Image (cartoon, rainbow, N blue to C red; front, side, top):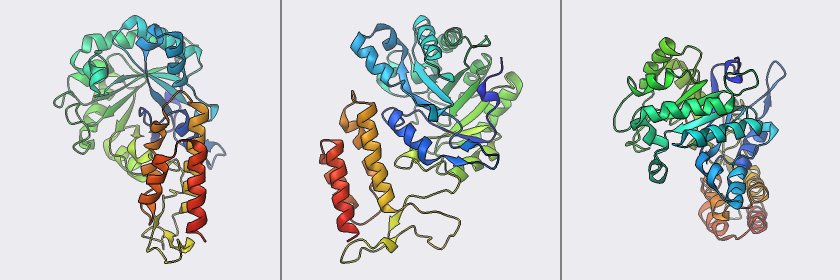
Length: 366
């Protein structure tokens, strides 16, 4: 069956699933601010987006109230398509149920998390723990495909996100087992579980994954993940590795403009004038580069407010403190940032955040 992964133009960049980061509010901002018109008249942006990962076990076992909260993590907007729901479970029946639910909810695909290093997830036999239990992993993939109806004309594809190994490089044992199931796409975080993010992602390893794909599952899309710093960096890493695409994670923090082809960059400020922040000082270090469009401080902070308001509107069940982890990314690199950040961290509501930002901009641009 032909699915959307086979029609995504290569090379491509996709949005990583990051818990309490790439939620519905942030994804909607990425869709809005990275959108652009391609030469062929279509609207561009990230090639694919993922939801935060959701517990399939929770979708089966949770109380009605708990299930409602989990379903909120599967909230998406049409502007985010293609949108893939990421699930985790060590129980095949639960995975089948959750994949069927995602099919019913209209997702474009289902992805299985087999790389999360969080200990609470691993204790459930999920995430990176799957690397140590390939037989269970294979059963989970098969269950997801049944639930998603992947082999039928009305089905949706199943993909996998994992790591190169648990304690060491296991590309030549672990990756072939996954590819033998012919996933629609395979994202490989180029670190082991033990390495976490303490060492640089090793993109030199990805050609081995591509080689296994070419041998075992030629239709599977291979996506590299780890330390993609910019769109240009992502495309370079893809070209050097022979992969189909790159997944972007931490570089998205505070930067919903990431995928815009003008490469609009978050600003930094030069010296702070005694009377306030001069608008002309809001530039990057290389202000003579005419190929770059800069994001003004005012625009950056207004998007922070918009992000906060969307978070409260779409995710009222989440603790407001979750939103505040974004403030450090939005509010950095300019005089007065530390004080502004401190005020924002103490703001109890979206309205208070808006008031703090409005006051700062009024004083800074006076």
